[in-house]
Image 1 (spheres, rainbow, N blue to C red):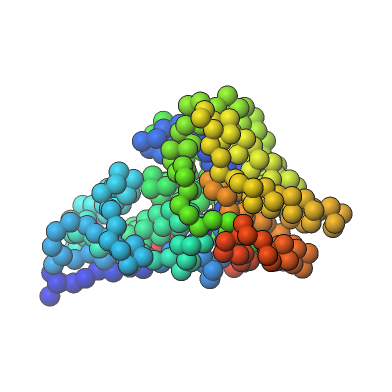
Image 2 (cartoon, rainbow, N blue to C red; image 1 turned 135 degrees about the vertical axis):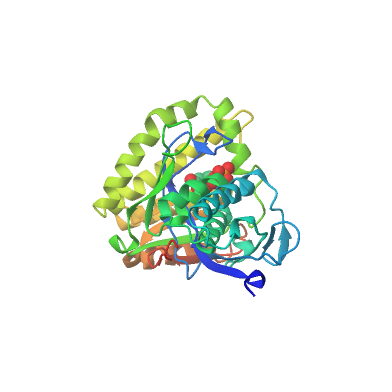
Length: 355
Ligand code: DP6
């Protein structure tokens, strides 16, 4: 019987690590950023969220979400914003075509899991919201491109909009008050620069002290340095980074990556009261990258840090000996590195169809 049908769709979404950072909201409600940002997507074979969305007229009660085997809050404003937008798009399709089942009126059951240990200390909200939005878009058979879905995922978590693509991805911050121009676009596919690698050094798997969401709002409200970052530093970094990716120029890519991470953490320190995400072990990773590059006589490694102490080191496959080798020997007998390091392939991301 049609009324007993359970409609189902599954998808995966990858983790991305920004090389030009998103930090600051110009509109917290619509989750619009103060600046554009750019990231590299990591391989789904290593790091991804798998999400299955089902709906049925036989389901009782409200929408539900199970995250890594635990019931999770689906009532948060950001998740609700995503569900509202997706339902509205499905309802519009149903209004146009009365033979479509009324999925928009049925309760949703969403089950989501990460294939990377929570102990990896990686922010999972990017992959999580990207997978949630795409799974429901697939379930609802929405004819939406990844860029259109990025407009919805952005409302769940800003960085999630960049996880709708593989490869090298820009989030164009946009200028419109309605946010319709604040979306992700592909700068280059992974195949354009397939030997890019990311080494993730886990300093601490503990939950971060100050969340990105609240940290960036404190920075916007109190940091003077931040005004310069959004007015001149980030626009220059975006231009240089896009050129470096276009030309596959690793030293230029590395310089912008490291300078942008430094600029972001300087603004965190200039926040009042200051926010410290990097610690002594993080700073040791910075020194190690400098030593690796000095020994090589050229730039073969670049560090970047998000809202926590863990380091991500970008390098090219052909330099894995000196880069990964140096970090591995450094890690031996070092107390600070809790869970060691793992190298992730940032090249082999395959995109699912949007619908
Ligand atoms: C430092 O995307 O987690 O990782 O939009 O409030 O959910 P919300 O913030 P979020 O912030 C990510 C900040 C960052 C830099 C980046 O990924 O660009």
